[in-house]
Amino acid sequence: MNLKETMINNTVQAYSGERGCACGCLGTYYYADGACNYANGDSINDAKRAATNIKRIANKIFELIAEQAFKNNRPDIDVYMTDELVSVTDNRPDNGRTYSLYFS
Image (cartoon, rainbow, N blue to C red; front, side, top):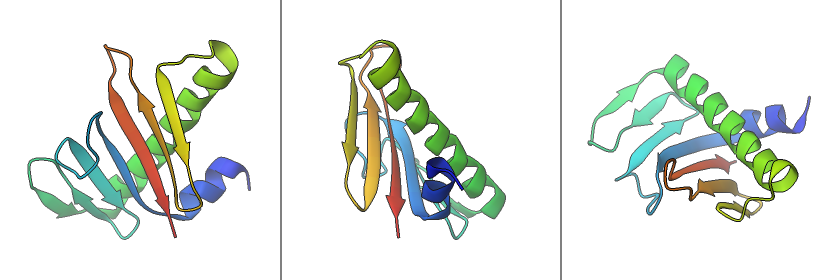
């Protein structure tokens, strides 16, 4: 099992949204138990959608970290990591999103 798979398997929730806030008002939270909470206040329980988006967010995090660290050393991509989460914010004017994985 590689690092990305380990992170996905230990994710309890993931977030994707516009940069600036991660309370849920600018994006969507996906939970390992299948819950999906959207910025407009809607909530659904869709395990397939949640799992697909957790993987998508993990892939985007790894893509942005690679771009920041290995390709261009981009100062406009912020990476924040603790034992409980990894969060990457793309501060480029045309993208402007935050992606986070929260671990158990």
